[in-house]
Length: 246
Ligand SMILES: [Zn+2]
Image 1 (spheres, protein in one colour):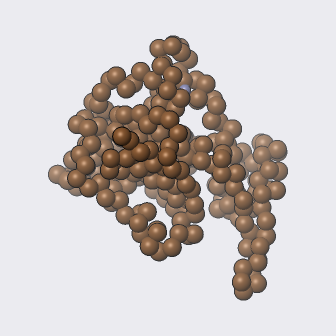
Image 2 (cartoon, protein in one colour):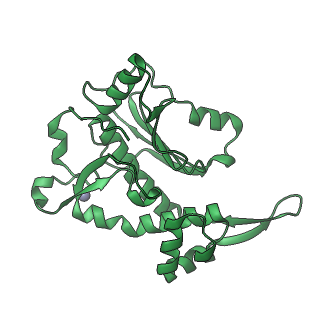
Image 3 (tube, protein in one colour):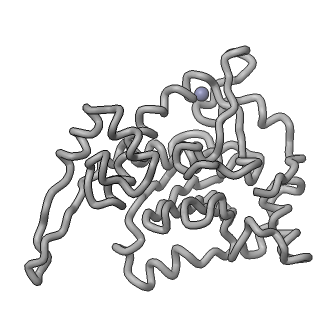
């Protein structure tokens, strides 16, 4: 990805954007965290992957949910939870090395019959874990694009396979309108909009979406008085997280 310098307000950099703790109070105990987490992407991860600084507790606190997320999504995409039957390397590795997790995901698989009697494999997600990972990434996207943290629990968080959305719902989700809201001067979103408006040549910014890795991960942050984060993973999972602001 193109490296975009961030000139937004330095004062926002004092906190862990995940839990709100001041980083100076946890001196020496903070880590750089990629946004999105590298485990969500195929190897090799793109250069200049967005990074934010978070406290170490948060950095390690999310890892088991992230493992679950990656293994679950990989299993769904592959239609099974067998490590040997995985289409994605990352889920193959996690399922092969974590027997308990593999069993949990295997147990969440059911075979259902559709109205015409065809068998269909259905996975029941642990939405709490899925959404924890999505909200973590969404916080990172808001911060990285706007230079402002989105503290507290979001007012709205959902994740649903794109194919389960109606045509109208999918259109509404995919159509990104950055409108007339001009993000804070110096923020990355401002730069993306300006570069695209004037030169139309930011290869990572297509139809309002930031392409992290084509076909694997894209996101957008819309500032319409709220922060609306949309993420599409593997062109399969559509997630939306909203923080109302007043
Ligand atoms: Zn933290």
